[in-house]
Image (cartoon, rainbow, N blue to C red; front, side, top):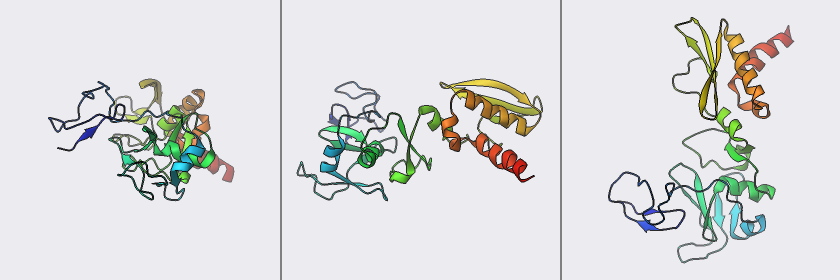
Length: 224
């Protein structure tokens, strides 16, 4: 079986089972194979000294060779179990998409970095035009609809029991019921109103409810 490595204490071991270990056998860390999203203890100057970033491809390459295993020009980083690219600098791991932001703009993002293409299979798409600073709520709005969603609008579904459109919204990982409505447009409007009340208005481009109202209600009325 493949050798595993803890991203906190850097302990390496061969697992006894093909299943993912629950903890690192040395430091006992549960999330041993993930990197903290908010590491920000490296400067842009130091980053540019060690790495080169291509904003068109999103790929980092090494400018400094610190070990025999690393050569100048090598592609830096590797995928973790979540699909993100982790890069080690000065014996510390960093997420590549956050490094890209620091490299291009000179500061660490206050919020999380969201991938605009929202492709769960390609979280390594780190070219700068595909990255944006976003709050946790904004990232949630950028998540794709569930498999059971047939309306095309997140949080809006048809209820066979009431014969009306049912509307819900997720807050802090809990689903909140907003009511049932006769028309689809009314249901979508209530969904968007709830989003706006929660302060999600800064990321309307991610909202399927906002896009529907903009294209089917606002623009239609303006043409008339």
